[in-house]
Amino acid sequence: MTNLNTQNNQNIIDNIISASEGAEFYLSEDVFDQNGNKLLGKGYKVTKNIKDKLISRVLKKPLETSITSIPSLTVDVIHTEAITLINENPFLQNFKPGIQLDAYDLKEIELAPLAALLLTVQKANRIEAFQHTLFMTLIARLIAKKLNFNASQIYDLTIACLLHDIGELYCVIPDTQNLSLEQWRSIMTHPVIGSSVVRQHMDYSPYVSAAILEHHERSDGSGYPNHVHAEKASDIGKVMIVAEAFSGMVRRDYNARNLFTTLKLVNHDFPSIPYNALIDLLLSVSDYEHLKESNPILDQLLAQLKNIEEIIEQLESLNTHKSVNSELSDYLIFRLKKICQTIYVSGLTDCIDLGLWEQIKLDKEINHELFITINEVEWKMKDVIRDMSLRIVKDDIQVSDALLEILQKLKGSDMTAAVA
Image (cartoon, rainbow, N blue to C red):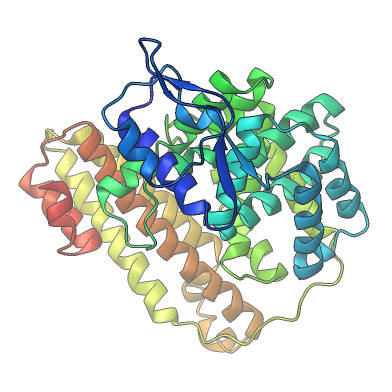
């Protein structure tokens, strides 16, 4: 982690100071600068004043590797929090008693000192992120057992899941869903940072840090940070990709049937083997929740499909003239066609083409699935816009006026500032 920039180090120290309201943090050893000069002694209490004492000083080693907390997160605490999560989450309760045994097995792992510190800070500052971590860990272990992973693989998977988001503590995580490009760029570094922290400062298997780096990749290469195809990820990484995304779906408050419908729509995004294992787990849940009443805005879905198809036609026409942005246009066409595929899978267009819509439009289950489709399409559109914006900024691409006009149609006038 010595190669991390000063801003990242500042973020983690700020997070530790923020967490000090619920715990006390002390230096576990003397702190030296790169020239061997002692700056602070063992036992020094970490407060906001520590930044003033270390400002502009280059340390021999990252400060957080020399900090401990009282109390510190232990495997017993992780076990207790996991049991609480299971008891409070109706979905997880479907997998009792096996999942309770998985929670008990969490007591057998060994937490590196820095791992304990970072999880302590995460739990104190971002409880939802900590609960997401626990949920993901439990789901990942269920999938791994379904795939007959051996004990060593399950151990490495468990450690990787628990630490998969520690890189976020080194980033600026705004409390909003409307992120700027710079905020997105910061957040998208968290797998790289987390993987580096584990690799350099914790004595875990190299499979752990590799899987942390992979946990946001996708099967079409649209994930991050490296845009690699998820099918090429490690076995542990593939399970984490599915478990992490599934945990995000659960946080969107879908019931069991909603989750199953959503997974059918996005099956091509994830590695097939762990994805199918997750589907089998869902099918094993016999007591599906009752379908909730919904009021889908079906015209919205049809309008969205028409808009996307028109944009695809414009992009294809643009590419026939050998545009300077042909490669970017081809990629956008690819992503938009995948969204169209999601709509086609819903069966909406088949109903219309066959003249059946008037007869079945009042069907509760069909309306329910289409409502889920609308939500998923909106989610995917936001992801495409984010991805395109980041690629333009990252590669410093000069966007032609013709492509800029199409991008504006895709999102609206807000896109102008992002790509100008």
